[in-house]
Image (tube, rainbow, N blue to C red; front, top):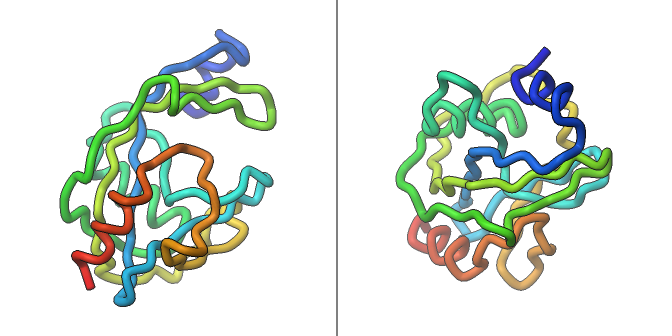
Length: 150
């Protein structure tokens, strides 16, 4: 059983504070990569929780690889976000409030491993057509970072 699964077995659906990481992965045209979740949650940045004993840098590399098959190197931290705005209730009723370290990441390779089944699709979006994300990352920050990489 995973760490979160073990905690959930004890507290049920109650609010759980979680440390997490998210990636801004730009392409050469200033667009950013988004992940469409298989569970129907919509679009998000590639992201996930930090596992016990794992550094945030290790977590972002692992999460991006699992969700996208991209090998990345965290270039820098764009910000740290949290509080009530980063509270989310999953379709199964699990309530969480994330404190997220947002990284700008460089793609350094591709893996042939199987992509995590929680990813329905991946797509790069420019600012005008970007869908609403599950968590309210500041769009201006996301796209300013992507434009600096072009």
